[in-house]
Image 1: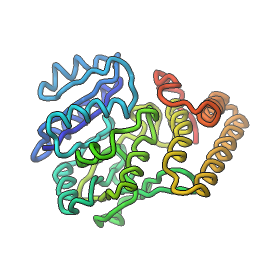
Image 2 (image 1 turned 90 degrees about the horizontal axis):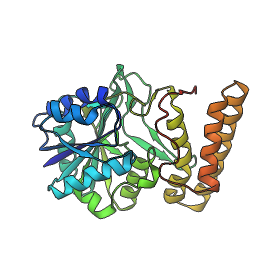
Image 3 (image 1 turned 90 degrees about the vertical axis):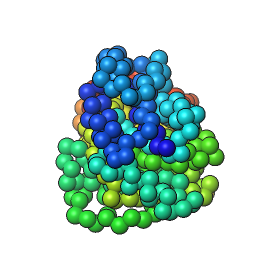
Amino acid sequence: MIAVIIVNWNGRSLLAACLQSVLDQDPPPKLVIVVDNGSTDGSVSYLRSTWPTVTVIEAGSNLGFPAGNNLGIRAALAAGAEYVLLLNNDAQLLPGALESLRQAIDAGGPAVWAAAPKILYRTNPGVIWAAGGRFDWWRGVSVDRGIGEPDRGQYDRAEQVEFANACCLLVRSQAFRDLGLLDEAYFMYFEDSDFVARLSRAGGRVRYQPSAGALHDVYGSSGGAPTRPSLVALYYSTRNRWRFIAKNAPDPLRRCVAHGFTIASRIARMLEALAKGRAAEAAVVGRALCDAYLRRTGGRTYDPAVRGGRVSR
């Protein structure tokens, strides 16, 4: 049994393509759960009236991406799901993707706990967004492989990878039982990096399966565009990096270097933003650094209602 978990926050315009791609899979998943994080755009009424086979869980407020997923994961585990697909609402599966991912996990045996597809830009499906990935512990980040490269078949070999993001990730249910759920302190961004790093330390492996495909509107759910994330995306991706490094860097040296690189690179970005008249961007980065390294805060500390305000990279 496969359960698909989709977290939604004011993403009504994204849901039709996402859900249709899921229900068109052969065979379709037994359970599709949309967790709505307090949307105000009519998402819940739309889901109930248009997608009657979809289970809707109303969180009541914006709990964030990991907490929203956790509500869905708990429901999936309670329903007896053997596999859980985490899927962004701004993504859609290509035909056959779900079965291909399941087969990749089964073929890999008990050591394989998760499988990821080749993910392409929805606005430019000839270009790769992620073909698996790796961890760069000296900088304290996870790195998507192939990002921005034309898809010429260079990543068409199924293989084990260090990292795969949760834009589209099929996970054995047992992994959540053994490791626990997503860390809700991240609120959004880096929670998937944290989960995969924990999975790896526990001996689990991630399989990249290029025969499975997905399309993604990068930053579609948080506002912004691939080269211009919104202020809210910039805040949380900056703030959460310290937590990811502190929890997961494999040794004190790389932990120290990664923290130093993070602080230095973010200060450089602040100075560049100020020099180019982007005061709001500089302020967001500065606040994120203070919330991370001085206050050590987690959860929702910056209003996600600020979906606009795209910044330049």
